[in-house]
Image 1 (cartoon, rainbow, N blue to C red):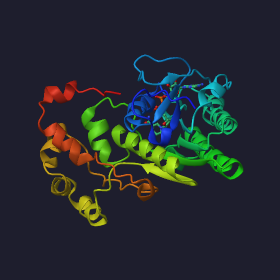
Image 2 (image 1 turned 60 degrees about the vertical axis):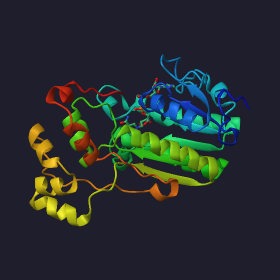
Image 3 (image 1 turned 90 degrees about the vertical axis):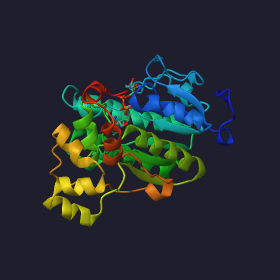
Length: 296
Ligand SMILES: NC(=O)c1ccc[n+]([C@@H]2O[C@H](COP(=O)([O-])OP(=O)(O)OC[C@H]3O[C@@H](n4cnc5c(N)ncnc54)[C@H](O)[C@@H]3O)[C@@H](O)[C@H]2O)c1
């Protein structure tokens, strides 16, 4: 075992390898796992600027398997991230989706088996519910690959299913009102993944975790919302009326309540909802809001 974190030893000296470490989620996850005390190996197609320096880097290409043996060699836990996703459907073929999302996942799980890794956190998606779409279909197959490797090879796993956290272009509409519907804050997703790593580190078996926004709206609130969206929003989220009117947000559809699969098991308690966004935006000028760009 190589312990590459030069600081405090990881929880029980546990080493995590992150594949796709240079992407949106990987960049946020590495510092958090380091802060939690894990040792890290980062892997991607090639070294990426700006990654944490307290980790070893191992290049690997999931389409061929080159480098996977070295990347997984010293790991106790694999966090597997690379995938083509929803935004790639327009300019990538179904075969390309299959190669990276399915074959790439299978190869990486097989490398984990060969390296003696017995714990995996894999990024599924809420697109799992839409198996008629190629992206969602590859997430269905991916979760089946986890099931297979658990029963055949004793690999414990968590399949984390985030809602969309893609970088937003309009902080009011994409991000703010998005938190009422199908979006989740990236920090909550990163919390969900760290908790999943903690869970597999200490448990055997398999879990699915819905990485979604907080459950802050009750069934009664949804009924009220149908009759009076803005009034109900203002009752639930102080200051909502003025912010909704200021940005001309359409919140006429009732909010979506999250499914809470796996929340209790891993201790997931998301905290960023429409109300936290209202509080943040209320103190800012229109120019400050317009200038706000996604930091990921
Ligand atoms: N971002 C979201 O909104 C979102 C929502 C739900 C689920 N997810 C899932 O989370 C995971 C990570 O998402 P992300 O946003 O960080 O993705 P991303 O596209 O930002 O990063 C993917 C990383 O994988 C690497 N990669 C691509 N092809 C590779 C290959 N052949 N071999 C090795 N590495 C390769 C890329 O270089 C990149 O660094 C994905 O599985 C995605 O389906 C993401």
